[in-house]
Image 1 (tube, rainbow, N blue to C red):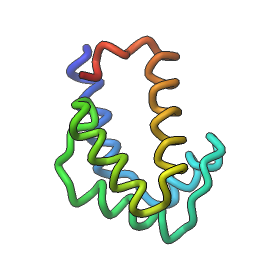
Image 2 (image 1 turned 90 degrees about the horizontal axis):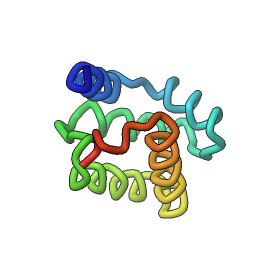
Image 3 (image 1 turned 45 degrees about the horizontal axis):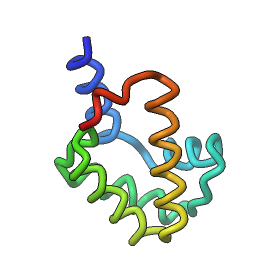
Image 4 (image 1 turned 30 degrees about the vertical axis):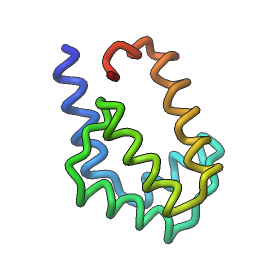
Length: 94
């Protein structure tokens, strides 16, 4: 089951749209612009990073900081950690 969910996570990131990113940003009180959402989605589509690996996640957060700013990237990282704890899947993320 874990492998199936991990594949779904990867697929969702590869196919996420800027509109979806803006929706999630609003839902979780993360401020990004439409242009930033387009850049983030383009980055996710163009890269084969694995969000389940800490090293790849850090690359993703660094790129997010470049596209937005350091505070937004830190806020996203805190939200990510909060959500994986909330759903009890911390062990899936190495």
